[in-house]
Image 1 (cartoon, rainbow, N blue to C red):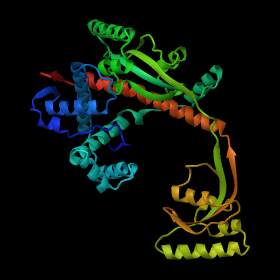
Image 2 (image 1 turned 180 degrees about the vertical axis):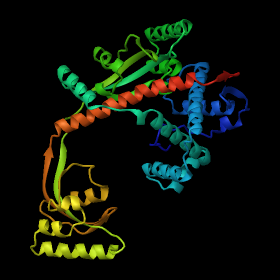
Image 3 (image 1 turned 60 degrees about the horizontal axis):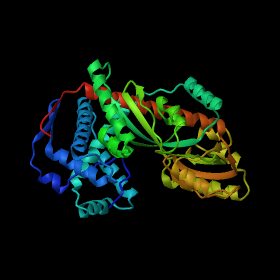
Image 4 (image 1 turned 60 degrees about the vertical axis):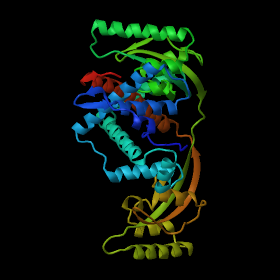
Length: 419
């Protein structure tokens, strides 16, 4: 079976679902969800499950809720003009195929050999991409992390003692609508007590999450993966310190509802070190007057002059089209991995200290590189600030996405039919 590495994919097109008699199981705004769709997704959940699933009727309701949530997101995306064209879709499919060490044709053949319809799979990827773009626009792009937030985050870490421990958490959410009425809160509390009772009686946490959680990861057993404390929602950050591996928390109240978390594992990270390179380059750009052949020829001549004893710095200052580095004798300063474009970094990494490389082309033009030195640097302050910024951002995205989905769901008209 192929392991897909893009998005959280739903394998579609099972024969069992296709043969089921269609009927409407839910109306979502002005569109319907059919029994065949529900059957397909339910079967796919079973295929991907490790066996820890709730009873059939509870699983069916959970799957239907996921379909409803997917439908309202696709409707929202269509309403604001979010589309994914065939070019972008084909590029994503090629990436999935590459991740499986296959060509696109080989990937399609492998899918069909395993009994899956490629056209249905292709459209499921399009829907995933649309939803990702919608969430980026509605949530992620609106996230702002201030320097003060980073300062406060790092200060708190320092007070508590720098902790690189990562935690593997499972999560159950009993959702409560915004501005909930007393009877809605009461219904949620009844559901919460039932969940607590199941856990006390030894029911597997993953199974309870799959059957009763309103969280995004419910059908994955509530698994939210490995996180540092900084990446956890604020309401979990302190609670996780009180848990031993295997323990779960008391209910935690938030604006989204009631949460229960379980610590499934924890581990410490190693110290982060960055290998840096000090290099200079000469760039010849191509334009109407200088084509690839001419640019390569000019740089090759400059390389021969350097190898004959002329100074790289002087030639860079006189001939490089990179005006920013030319005034610094071609110097690019100390660069860390990922800063330069891939083709430039690969050429630079292949050189010994003091070596002048071969002439090569990148998207910016033709280059000649000389490496002057290398070092392994502990970029403590810069690394910690960047890491803190990303942790805060991811935490905000997760919290705001949960709230946004809840609001989107509450604002939608949903009529259940015979499931």
